[in-house]
Image (cartoon, rainbow, N blue to C red; front, side, top):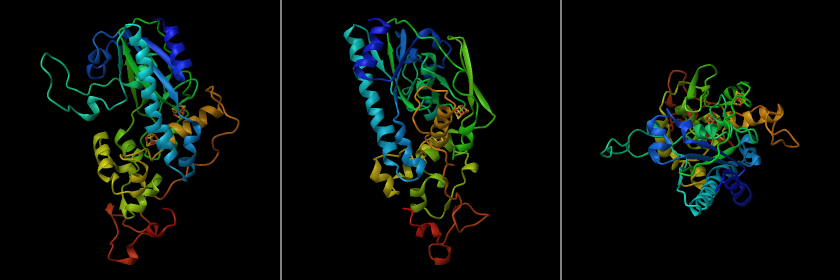
Length: 352
Ligand code: SF4
Ligand code: SF4
């Protein structure tokens, strides 16, 4: 099995949109809780592939009119297609006598914290996960933008990734970084969660590949609250259910795990969310880090997948973050349900 045979199968038979290969040597120096070698000590090559997100999935959220198509076709549905592709490529690899270890996207040990006792013999506790985005860069699929989202030359920020570790020694692809993100910071301006830092960066170093790059120091807790729809500015469903809560994003200092747990705790209280899904969903719609970035890269012709019409030329919509009645000196629930004068007018709104 050559690299080309594998790529031809993945692209022409399975239908993935892009695929790249890194030798395991490029992961030298990776933290053990994220290293492919911790998952599979015999790994020789790391394969990363992408399936594009259909651009039209962003239309409803960008208009403030329709959320399900993003959740269904860009998240849960597309993730299933990535898993199906992973399975079919894995079968192809194993038909040639090599092991295929599929690694789905998941939070790393560092984010989620140790989840169980450490097995004997100096091993790591469970929930070791390889970063798909870093692996994608090292496999030559693209680069990480200032937003920390993977940008590919074909689709910019608009894809989901699959990852396979194998003991097959495959011809690698060159690493290419610094060609797509122009540091416009439009992602910073349009992120409703104030999650993307305008100036402060983190450097990611891959000594095995001889490369390093800088991304913003993402406030993952703020992003998680906004992503799960707990940001009033971009979540009419949340406003409808909790009209009096004031949760200014700028002031939130929660961790990713706290945001995750808070989203799961509140999810069942919001009827429109339950109608979409059985678990918390993508309410933000990646307004800054994907929609605005994509719009910018298309207009500047910095990516290949260009359309006949601009995606949008409108300013992103926002709802008031503060309840329409409330307290300047008090955060939390700010209205008195017993006092009709204090009931926010948003509860009487036509919107949801
Ligand atoms: S919007 Fe995209 S291209 Fe512009 S700085 Fe952010 S990641 Fe880079
Ligand atoms: S998902 Fe939303 S909140 Fe998170 S970084 Fe992207 S635009 Fe900002």
